[in-house]
Image (cartoon, rainbow, N blue to C red; front, side, top):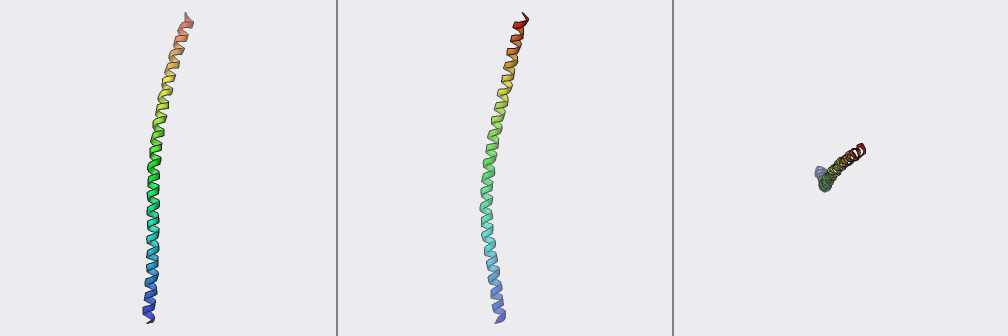
Amino acid sequence: MFEELKEEITVNRLSEKVNDLLVRFEEMKSQNNTLRQEVVTLKAQHEAKNIQIEKLEDDLMNKDIESDDILSKIEEVLKR
């Protein structure tokens, strides 16, 4: 009788631990999905910022070219 009771207690403890592990597993799965979505969002934001930076760099390069052209024209006029 004592052995049966001991086995039942052991089985109950194991069952509780397995249930706890299952709950933690589901929580971790949910957290993992949330983090995956956050990573996807951050990657998209990063790509958008990279595109914006490239556009600004192109604009800056064009402005530099324009200012060089204007400076050249001014120098030509001053040489006359």
